[in-house]
Amino acid sequence: RDYFDLKFRSALRKIRELWCLGNEFISRAEPWKVAKTNLPEAGGILAACLNLMRVMAIVSFPVIPETSEKIFEYLGLDKKDLAQLNSEDLGGQAGSLNYLKPGQDLSDIGLLFEKISPEQEAELVERFGV
Image (cartoon, rainbow, N blue to C red; front, side, top):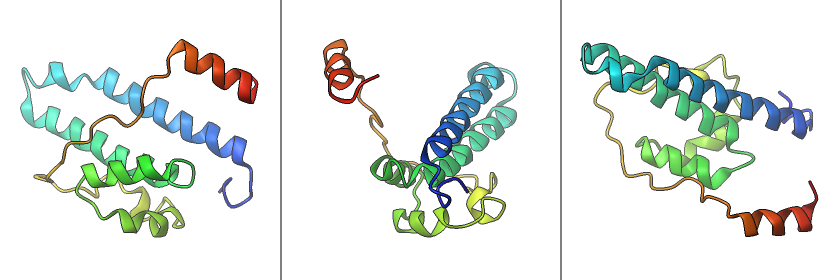
């Protein structure tokens, strides 16, 4: 909603919170450990993570469209759908955590972001401030 109200700082903060929740979920669920004793449960955890990646790509699309498109391609989804899904209410299909089906083909995603060197960081701080 913040995007549409032009509250970009708030929108970005909420996107970051969503990414952090996703990271926290996978760290706590530990599918790599669960897989040793319960493969179906580990598969369910990973399916939830992949569906969360899809939702994250949708909400991030206005800010990092190329990264969102890469995630959609990785998930075997049509990146042309991103703009339409981003304009929808996340309570519907766009926000579904059961959208991807078992057996979904995945492609090689590569790096989503490059690590910023200390020199690049200093240059960015100089250029844009803290």
